[in-house]
Image 1 (cartoon, rainbow over the protein chains, first blue to last red):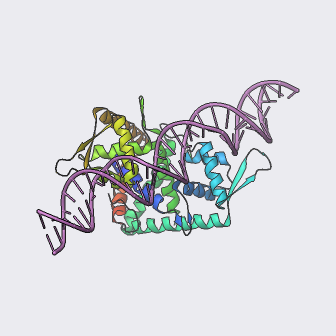
Image 2 (image 1 turned 180 degrees about the horizontal axis):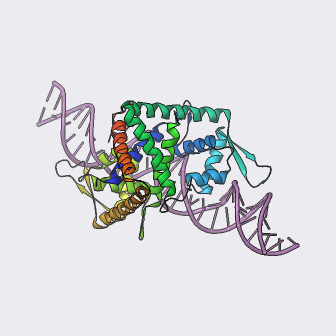
Image 3 (image 1 turned 120 degrees about the vertical axis):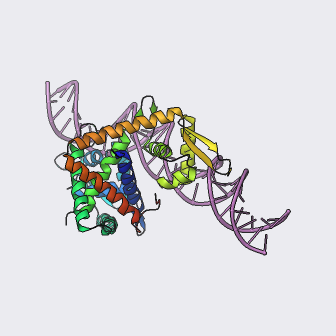
Length: 148
Length: 148
DNA sequence: ACCTAATACTTGTAATTTGCAAGTATTAAA
DNA sequence: TTTAATACTTGCAAATTACAAGTATTAGGT
């Protein structure tokens, strides 16, 4: 059998680099982790800090400080949750939404370019495969902490 | 069309977390970036610093210091290259090889578990897809700096 | 051969990021 | 009503990062 790990290592590294390069939006420059945070806040509905931190596998203290910076940058808003005043609900500001959309567009542009090098059949196969992988990984018991 | 970016974001995050969790080898604990470095040194034949740094998309100064730590940990050896004394050739020590092998084994164990949730057909398809993706990404002009 | 430029790396420094310990505030459970 | 658990925040101190500026070596032009 060919080397499975090598295949996946190279693939994930490429995507990691992609994420790294795609976080400059106009004047606002956000880090890789910050872009992941913004992405998750967009995807979920008013999530709590703990929720997002768990999803991303981040230490809550590190996360807390990252949120502080994002709030200062006026990309994220923290509102106390009325039903349980310990928790803060996270939302994106208008500017935050803009930044998220911009990054999203860049990523999709890249993905489309990647897929443009494939036939329709191949494209379908790859998409199906990624879905399969995601499902299979979520079933795994070996790894990893954040069970998304 | 379904949301391409979401699919890939989730997949790469999972693999990222996997890498993060899989770097504890006995007493030696190495960081995520260090494990990437060790992996690349193993894969290449006596690479130079610049080579590995480029492959990983790391700043050479950051890389230099990471190598210093890995040398102190006795996982990596730096030898001056006779034909060009500016360059240092990187190799793994015995212990370095052991650590690399251990991490590799863990990763493969995880991958095997993931694949055990699939049929033979699906497994073949996924592997073929990852290969396709790697090829397509390497052809892209949009991204990313390190052209591996 | 000789001067200049380019390459391969290293160090100074300063900012950012990280996580453990230990804190506060609030809610749940006994 | 006391105790425990949860959701976060701050005090640190260590690790990581990158820009600027350095050294050493090699390549190129004349």
